[in-house]
View 1 (spheres, helix red, strand yellow):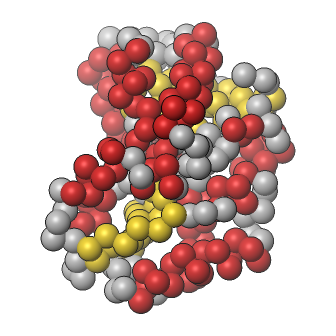
View 2: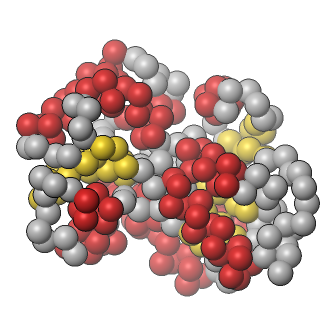
View 3: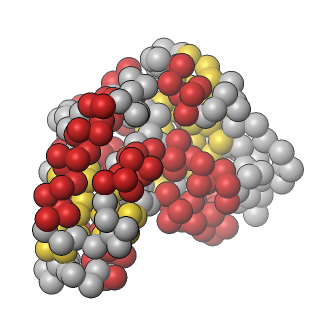
Length: 258
């Protein structure tokens, strides 16, 4: 089965590029279109209705560009809107949610930490997943302000360090041995997080698992491209300089209102 149409990826901003990179590394020949809705970031403080509406707007853009499957590279959009998207559109969707299962199953202290947005932690999908692990203490922390600092290009600011320390220290005190990053923006904070956490605490994000699932869906339902080279496309509706910086100016970034 072959299909030369692109894979669509969207996020509330630039964070989903951490997911895109994993997909691109695993499937380098596939054409990808990345959509950063930076104008409306962060999604984590918005209502479910707003998140669903924004997610549908993003999907319409990607469908207009003939995408063959769509990766919702945003925890908040997945946990609040994936059901509606799958119900309303006849195209495969791959979502991303906090990797509680591997953390809980491998934890020796039976205490894990989750750093995520308010929208993710309050969602029905997240809470249903968390309830499956009654034997594990889950320390939840909303990452207030982190996404906005990343979107503003203040990744290594003193304010970022201060926020991370205030969010992570209570988890360290509670004896976590796994930290789950529940937002696709947060992998960009790993170098700073590692400076704060003791070495024995492992950090988990969902990027690699999402890339593998994308490969599975292409194999089973959609089809791989026959092209040997495809240049990725990046679209953003605000502050393109930050996306260019995250991509290290390797790819053109198109600023477009959508």
